[in-house]
Image 1: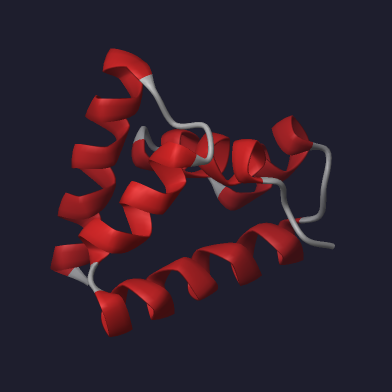
Image 2: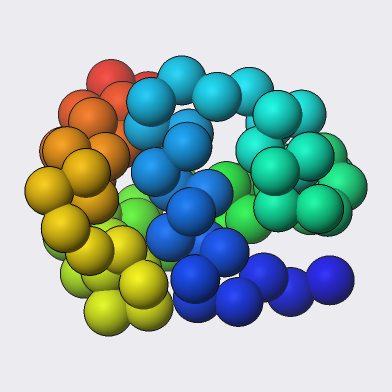
Length: 82
């Protein structure tokens, strides 16, 4: 199952503030496997094209506002540590 751009933005926000894959799956009404796959896919894309490009696309897909900016900063920090 593919997630919508809005769901991917929500996934990124929730993950950045510490939600588990299970919690995110419940919130987005999907499986934990879908969440794990999407996170891996986003990470792989960020390794190829850079986190800025990947997350700029996520912002355009629905990530907006001050909370979105905070979530983006947190997620970028997490990706650079991995």
